[in-house]
Image (cartoon, rainbow, N blue to C red; front, side, top):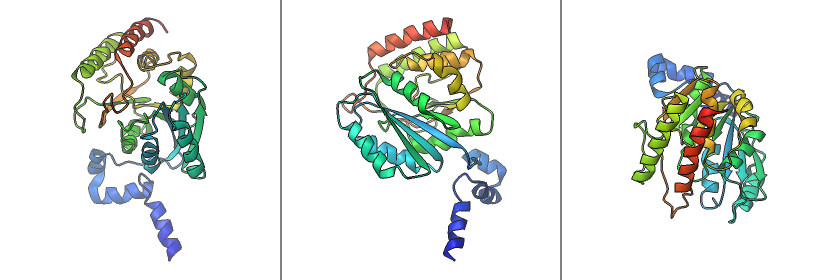
Length: 279
């Protein structure tokens, strides 16, 4: 009896075919689509690239949330020469959860601090999953939203999905007005060069097919936050199908460890023009 119960539980794994069939019988096809219920192939592997720099306060919590997402994952943590105990925490987490077949953990450590863009590029180089998503380690973005973000790619409607903090139907912590205004300015300027109509070019949540990463990764060169407009320009130039979906956002203050500053805004401005005009 226990074996049958175990088999039944496995068949009702969230986003499995059996799980979806049960919900479809109750809610109907239209209800499932409105609620974002669909089938994710059991063979699909999601690579989660997490750049880490001085994130000892949130590292364990974010990994717990990523592991809880009911998908087979490859979690790639890249430490960008942290000065706190992030490196030790990463090694401890690897020792603790390294045998989990649903959540393979991959570690990499930069010997010098190079920037978020460099950590993302290192993570891309190690990613082997079918789909890759970037995840900040600071708890501003919620991993429970992965399945919703993956849906356009899984259903072959899109090659790239951007999670937008500004589409308006998800919770959003109210913080810095000038940051918001700067983000909107940079996104609008980027759209002028790329001919995309994004609402949030600077978002962390960029979800890409493996083939897209294989195409653009060899050309990526930005070391810091300029990676955002650089990736966007390279994606647009190759005319990949891009979707944008709303996400929640729990922004943190500078006192809580927020790192982006006005110098990064000027660098992003330069990158928008540079990569908008030339590959």
